[in-house]
Length: 391
Image: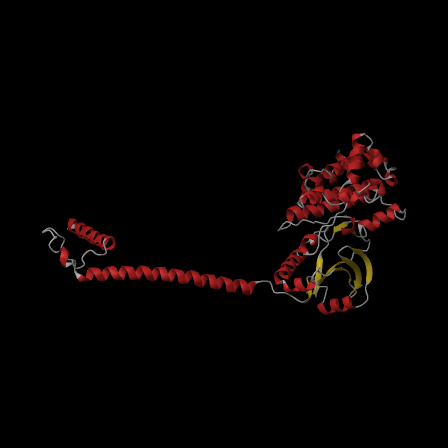
């Protein structure tokens, strides 16, 4: 009985094979070939076999058509979902702090505010909200071509997403974005107000003998700056590069605890170029490449300024705008064994910490290496600076 079943299955499979391999198999034989038939020619196949062939072909064509329709439908659904979920372009104030109300912020921005300072890309203002909260506002300069940029909705959405990401960053050594307002071709960014001003303001007061800044305070500033960079480089998701680290973007609170400002803005704004400055790494001039090691070079310049008390733009350093004349001067003194001559005279009386300061000069020199690969990472610099007293 089993043998009979196997024989029947085999015959059926053979028949299907013949139907698909020789479509003309079983068709009427033309008259001119009748005489050529041999007595052993195959028997005629019943009509229902041809119907089976048509059914199988129809099923296959239906499957292919259904598959293509399903793919097209899925593509349309995905497009609709992406369109519905895309970031809407917001107007007016976008608030990230419960302490700030939209109407209050708009009213404060429209009133007279106190100018704190300016930069190549905008101006800083101090304003007080109706609830008594004091905030700092940075009004960015309009885009180069405001009309064209306002038509580019993808650019506005990208800026909006980046600003929302920056607002989510929380670290004691970073300025938190509390709100922003998008106007025609312009952005106004709202931060916490820091009363002591920027590191640049403080160092100018030190050079004019209006303020004394001991080594302990300078070391605290350096450690806070590198901890802020460490968070941006290693703990933030996605990773953030500062792109424009310099003393004017390091804000100091009443205890001289630093907070990095303008993180990533030079990369974010479409009309912001990273202008040549003494804090810019040499590879940015050579191949326009910026990495986390470029931020380390900028930190090395800040550390050198804290140690020497000198401004990299002094005529003494020649063309400081081409990156690192202060660093080359430090390396020259190290090679000559005269590192002590580089230290700020106003902190030279603190003999107990002199060894720490000399070691910090060496750290600054490594950060200012011309080759990015020779510079340490922010993750390595944090223990190096916090443990200076152990060297």
